[in-house]
Length: 378
Image (cartoon, rainbow, N blue to C red):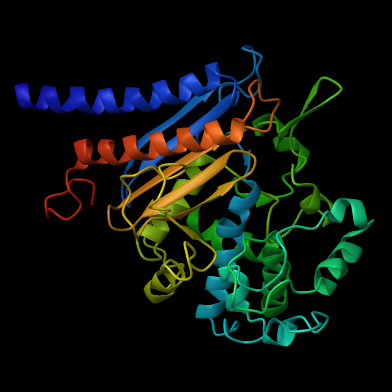
């Protein structure tokens, strides 16, 4: 009886440590609202909302089940990368074929050597960013600017994280799937995993559930994608534009931990495809995903294993998945909504690391070791 009481006390203290860390970030003005979800392949250990949608205490408290966040660059690994996975396992996409074979307008010096794999690894040689919202007046004009952009490095020689890679990959997916990216992932992935609040361009009827990402003349703006390049591309892009909730992202993370099966046993990905896309490659990159940087505690902490993979988003979102520890950690915030402190992104990175480390301890206290053979969470 005493042992059980002590175990419960430890669990509560670790959960309180997460509550305290997030609460302090809100008090410090890093973001007004957040959701944290921690779990294993078969169990949600913690799912909580913090703060409010805006700095007004009368605004809603974020709900892991209902609060919809602008995912920003998490779009790359929650839409574009899994779409590529689905097409690879269907034999409709070859990672080692030149991008030019899918997008004939992608021409220029060295571009014939750029493969789909290079896009996923961020080794295409393209620059990181283009201000499409300033240089283009339509989605088609913006697309042509990206297709025409010259390489800065020979393909395969330099790892440079680039939104342009993800944009191109989104168009490659559309060509291979022969349907729009948003429709493909909503039908083939989100519907099958029960991710009913994960979507591009959510309708106005859902705006009450969306955490705002900006202010316009004193009014909170929600439902308009924060990334201006995604906006110029019509709201649907391979690099940004997706919205989701903490609970939906947990379903996705659990499917990856279950080697491609949803919670109800629905197989979405083949086990070998999941392993291939989440294996460490060049630098800290996998295919689409980022691997944990073992040189710093920022973003992913110091206790996740070397096999942990994840991604972050500029609006204040992140997801980390550790197959060795059977653990995922989701932190969603609306950091870009009128932060009340300088260096909010640096402070958020540190918070993510603290939450990730606390999540590892919480999993150990609730479930024991994932390799013990007597893990109640498996």
